[in-house]
Image 1: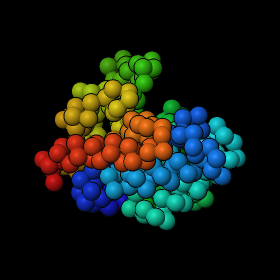
Image 2: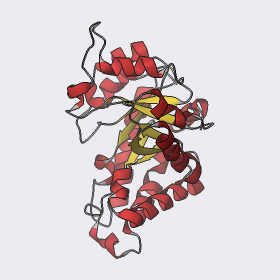
Image 3: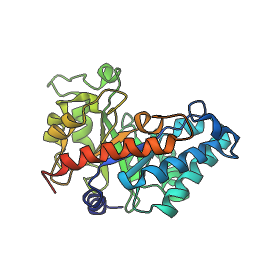
Image 4: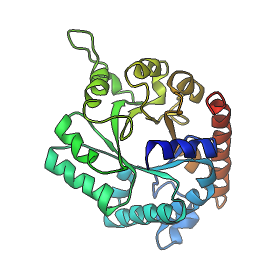
Length: 274
């Protein structure tokens, strides 16, 4: 999916919501545990309920890998189900990969050839040769970690060099030598608030994947005030506040309502650019 197609979906649905499929076997409703594949059964119900209100899904690989082969099968079935039934959805593997070149090339082959995903999150710490193997696939995206929403982001990402340039700024600037806003995005946590203004000075046209709205306390209004550009430029993820909003047999209906509420907020915030 290219940038224009992504923006067309945002305009059509009046939404830039990404539903995070952080599916934990210990948190899904108990009645699903009798299913042959409880993880997939949960994901399928969530996807069917929320698809009209979102433009992307982001399965977090850790939740699937924690279950070994069974979890990986559930993950693959989930991706196949989205691709077959909701082909307009942008699918992000939240994998945070990043290793020496030949290893990254194998990760890229996994996510872009073996499993048909649109994007993968990548850690930039090892530099250019760890990122560029992901960039050789037409229509696929690298989403590079830039300024994250967790408390520990202060440990390294704000470290400044002798010229006062902070590490996250260096990541944003240097990575634009490897790719452009047609195949690279950045992770910027919603909890960073007004920092989006500084991000936009360096990366004005790039899409930003924004976790941290909802359970982590980030403000959707603040993110949009400082981070939205003329093509929206935002994919805002919400996981727990949608998928775990209810743990009864009505969990999918409640997830639908939560996703719809967020879509309605986004529609209002998009009115200034659409």
